[in-house]
Length: 459
Image 1 (tube, rainbow, N blue to C red):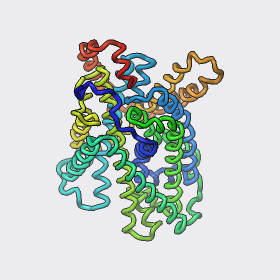
Image 2 (spheres, rainbow, N blue to C red):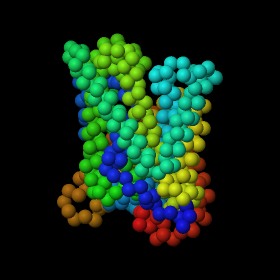
Image 3 (cartoon, rainbow, N blue to C red):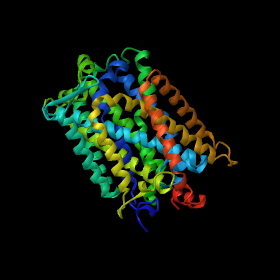
Image 4 (cartoon, helix red, strand yellow):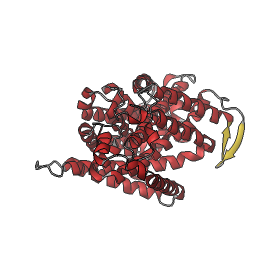
């Protein structure tokens, strides 16, 4: 059996801790290093923490929908699998295609952002300026650092999910240890007086932050991509794992906000380029230990990038394996990892490096739109799954999930109003997807519907 004919289960047998690390690392990322000051200024310390608590609570029902479907259909591809099962192969292709755009764009975001963090740790590491794009200079080091880490993570992924998961576990553990040390030092050396005023500029500062906080928990969606390579015990604990990931992320965000608020002055919170680094310096009483904040952010960036690269490759692999897209996407080269799909994602990531930070804002906006749409798809899939159940209240959970996802989609569309670049990218990607779909007509017909269903569902 050659690489294109392998079953969807790639054979890693990932355990509960690996799934937790994959999702937690994907959620936490690096945004808090840069944004924590803005959160404190706009919503106040208490308001910012409350916003993340409420945001996490809103995401819990959506996570529960993912867990229920994941237990019923534990196959590689996540949302792609659910779309196929309940809405047909056309919707499954569209779902995988948009997921691929999201995951690849986040990989590009991480590749561009990593040089920013590295330059803050090692000033001067970026070398001479090459040119400017969108008013932002691009240095030789931006390209070199992004490409170096892209290749390193690609090689790591090609070793198989088990190796990638072990590295992810180690990075997540180091990040948690540094964050806990930061909180303890801030409580010891900080001042409770800085927590006042607790709600910053009031409701007008609290509400905008509250509306976007659910998107900061979106990384748990990487777990369904790994279910085809997970152990039976991990799948049995899936509701607990996803709940633990969301709650742990909530604690991380609120802990970082509290620690930063205890040690940062209002001016530092408002004006510092990387407020978390300044907060670490105040908490530990040493400017050298400010580097610990940047290292924590670097680890967060790498855990997100590693998880998203993993997820992107699995979505493309599942698409090729089901022959709803190019067959070669399912090529493994005899390894226990999706080689062709991983190389494709890495190649696209490296091709985006010359655009520099001009990519960052569109990527964030696109991500919000696609993620909230996937929330709705999963809730609708669970609704369909329970449509024939006579048990009372079976539709309550997917109903709550649908209401939350619909609200998030509307809020995201409101934020995107007038942003032609983001809608242009979605339209262009959609047109390319339509062309791929039409070109794959012969490929699709090479399998019977029964054969394709077995491939998609992992049986």
